[in-house]
Length: 241
Image (cartoon, rainbow, N blue to C red; front, side):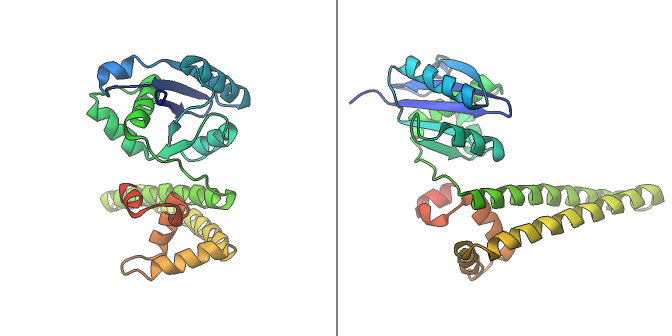
């Protein structure tokens, strides 16, 4: 059996940085910094160049796995460009990569270090491949994340309103901002409702989830948006997420 080959890719808007771990026998800071790394454009030409570079570095046409962080649209676009040309792709929660990096003593944050952490994470943990989301589920995910962003912003402005409520000018502007955020949230909620209504499988999943004590529709939407098809996970995999 050949040496295990794992690739870590830090995906950005216009650039991606890749690192390769070949037959790693120990996972520590020294091994991390010895991993080869290179940068590529985030487009079709760049992905093709990345595949060629990895194959040259590891001397093989395919690898055991590629690890990327879940970064919404950017990671989804990159995975779609890569397809199945290099090997199975595992999309992991950024928190998992961050915690793993800290366990190796990584305190700095650069694209090259992030890519190396992802490659070594793959070699050490060997995460299972991620089932690609359908276009509909990806759309739900993007809508949900924007909704969450607006919700967090609304809470922050509401807190400031409580602090500056005695200032008429500030209070008026804060109320206008909160009202604007609430209107946007309603539009996003309506868009998510429409997706669920027109997708029987998603509608059934929502009804199943809300039948669980303590799970409301908002929580159900978050679970389906962030985790995708729950049937593709084992109980332990869901707990790890």
